[in-house]
Image 1 (cartoon, rainbow, N blue to C red):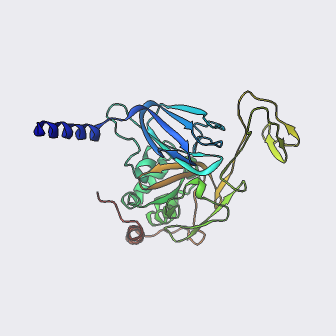
Image 2: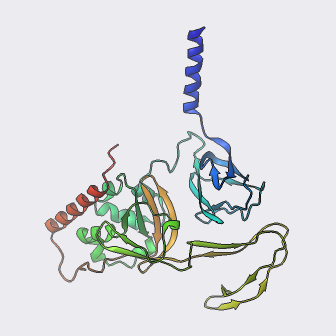
Image 3: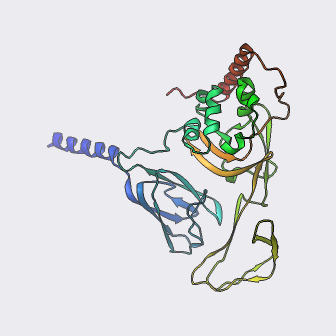
Length: 331
């Protein structure tokens, strides 16, 4: 009997270890936290949030995907995730509250975004093909796939269209430019504040500027149905190039709590604008920007270029510096 019991217990342990993600998950909002903070469902699965707290909260994705609006006590919100990936979310009323939904492929349960490093994720992004090619050309794939964590401000394909071919074809110069976009440590969009200076792996500094005072994303919510709010100094763009100053706007009654205005701040990195934030990788985070950043003290190529030996020497030195800061993951 003891042997049978042990076999049954071993079978249960084995089953638990290989159990597949479910098509439904529940999250309780209580004591100012999302519990559990991370849930996993299969593609096509649904997550249900219930506000068990005594104050209002929201469930808002860090990318434009889902937003519950204000949830009063006992209110519920559900969302169905059709595509595999990792989805971070916060409470807009209490930004320190963070959660994550991991959506996996239904066939084998393997997380799509589970072990992919920053170079892996960049290679999968359709608008970062030029950056992916540049990282490979500069021999930085292995170095940027190290343990980290670190943050990369990734120029999109449109940004690379404005870059001189002399830079793209000069391996040493390209390496300096690319490492100027990488910062040690993981900085989510909510961690970026106006006036912040970030030291890059290249050695230069990036300056962060936030267009809206306070948070990276600022939303004005109504607290309850029928509440009237006086909105002042709000610039609404009706057509291209046209701004209207709206004052003393009386909000009409709604049947349920609703979000009145979604004001997304402009995040600048030097002269570039962040166009997509918080793309998660296993060793850091990616923010897509609309311009290629160039260090102020970098010598741009004139009529003459470095010879191949000089290029190789500079690249080796830069890669060695990265590896010292962020050990390459050999596992």
